[in-house]
Figure 1 (tube, rainbow over the protein chains, first blue to last red):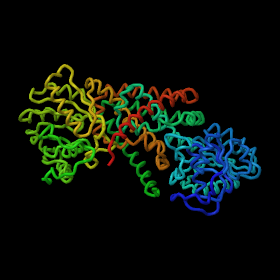
Figure 2 (figure 1 turned 90 degrees about the vertical axis):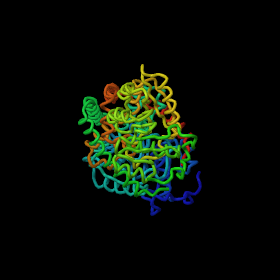
Figure 3 (figure 1 turned 135 degrees about the vertical axis):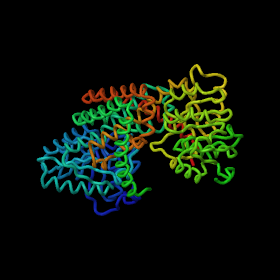
Figure 4 (figure 1 turned 45 degrees about the horizontal axis):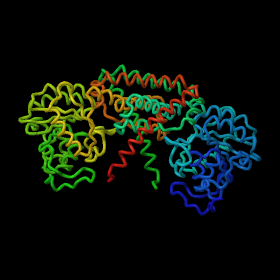
Length: 314
Length: 314
């Protein structure tokens, strides 16, 4: 067992204390996101209990870094939790949802951190009434995953999306969502409640899934084409393909769960690239491409700078 | 006129002194690359004369930062130079080549820094014998251009490609290329002589031009699709579209000059993205995509890390 959690230092960018929103949290899956949630939650609410569920090898690392108070590779340990965070790959979370709900002894809120929401939000409406599912998605990933990269300030000033169910939304959901919102804000995240899981999946198909697949496809195409001359690459290729280090298992699930939204996003990029190809000989076409790209990139930079200005740097 | 150049501090990562390879250099076009060459050359060889040619507004900035000793917006000033560096956009360099060669009074070497080489290398073989053209390309760009971002250490440990002419190559070229190589190494660059301008243009179509056009197309597609919700973007989109800030004028010229090599590179990426689209429902297809991408990205990171390890950080 780790030292008394009250003796842990507080991260400067996580708001201190106040009574815990949840007294007994269980994080299922201690990768980059789950591990960071555990680290951030223990710093935000030192008196709350953080339970970790994963393989023994990962649990040991999490204990060493004082990310969790209690560790188990048996899902049974979640039975006493009042908040369960599903932080495994998307399809595993879906299977875990029912398994966790069955094991909860009293009342509890379950949330997840997956990048595709329609399936799990629909499944969440079919749970017994004492368990409420609130779909969540922190936009705080990095190119690489895994507990080793987890950090308490991963969510500071980063958006964290909540996705309400459609018809299943009621007083119980609203109440649970208010608590999850307070939890997210305690971790430093910027809460945004989207209109629906459908709206979420369409949005992230463009904001996240398309850039990922593009970076991976580009790294593959360039590598296969130039081989060892990849050593001559400049900063541009390095930036554009940074995401190509992302783990296959996470993305296999996201692609399966959001295929119908990712496909039209890919179609739009393919059409744009085909347009560039056809316009290579035309100054006007290339100027239009860069003018549009410059404009959107500027919008993006403004929001990045705004968020960094507010961030308290360590 | 700036202060005595011998009083300038030396950058830690530029090898000090030795007699100048060229006594009187002229840099035509003081953007990011040309400006950085001027800054690095004045630090490497304080006794050499650095002449800058650009618009008055840019020349004033270059004088204030002591990047150049002599400034003129009239190309006539290059007449006494023993090295002329063409650092304007690609098509402008091509027009400048002949204009510069006409104005050179004695013997001189002319080089360029453009990202497309076949046109200018071919034109270089047609110059009068007392002027030798050595095509060059430092792979040290950034997303944004302009003199304001110029820095003396821009080329430190970065590849700088030389492109020999085909049949026109002889003793004069070899001799000039040896001097340009010493100049490049004096600026901190890692010299690589490619087989030909053709090999160069094919290589950079993949290493540089394809990532640029992909980043620009992606920024445009995502921006148009999500509009103001771009503010919810995470680090992934930011990395993947960093190049989308690049200036249109530079890329209009590159696309025109290298269209026939860029087109098949775009075709390969379009085919790869179409393959991803068709494989969205298949775990195997997505795993293959990520395995290939992970592997090439690792190769790329190894070479980036190797180059950063060697870099002397300020």
